[in-house]
Image 1 (cartoon, rainbow, N blue to C red):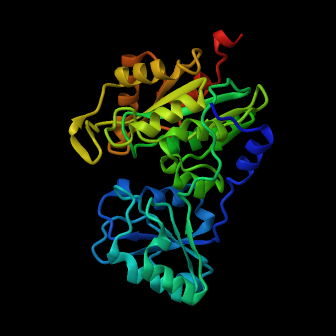
Image 2 (image 1 turned 45 degrees about the vertical axis):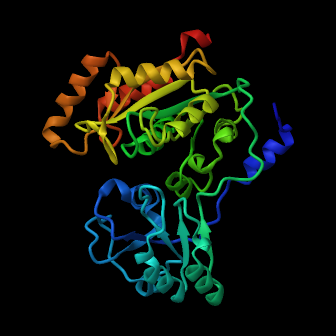
Image 3 (image 1 turned 180 degrees about the vertical axis):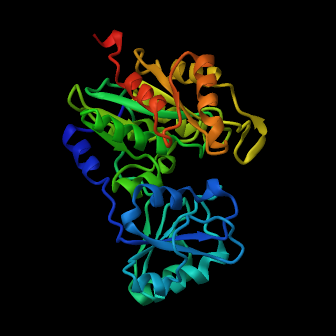
Length: 358
């Protein structure tokens, strides 16, 4: 099995920081489905100081609620980059976006993308950037030299957010839990594994852009050895039950070797996003499958609770639904974007000592 030295691993980890000029103008393209605007929404919620406004094409029905600006207006207000805030299925560059992207380059903005498609692979866009002296920045580009996973148990403690589906709150849950851990006086870091998290944190590895044999190795790099009382709160990706994205989810499970998982689910979502023929598993089945697979690299793993996305419910329904799910599952259930005793109970459960570690 190929291995790398500690020095080489440290060098790779140090290369994970991304250099993206800010502030940003968030580009929504012609998006009509809210889940696909998760990059723009994530930056609005978690890096608002870096966002000057949004830019959408005719036909777009999704908004971040930020001020609508043209690229020229955004540049005049201090913006230095146009960030493509859309994560469409397949991560492709829509040809209909090209005039807007080139317009942004022409007024002095760099263009930033977290999609699978490389910006410079588009000849027209690449030629415009070269002519204007602007940068095309692809965030979804893993570092070179990622090793194959070793399976070696690392020091420190880790939490991984997992889900019944994609685009339902794994990143938000990880960000909230890392923040709450620190409020409890715990040394904790958010570890980004996707393009939006990387733009928020300024560092990370886009695991779904890593060659499959190296995904678990990348997850090991993402959560390296740490002090025994340090927590890495790792952003999950995809779902073991998603026909398109289960591969990266499994590699992340094995490589992260989490001590704790938190299951994420959207209340009332019953079908797989983008693949409606596939029903979602029950929460019990999803928790059981994740625990069984994690035990391959960390037999001491436990599920601390459930993060329930209740954005589709009336506020008056939320508390009753959370209580119903908690009674059903016998573990804390909270919506991390709604403060209250449920969230505190979930945090305490995450931080509770694992008897098998004692």
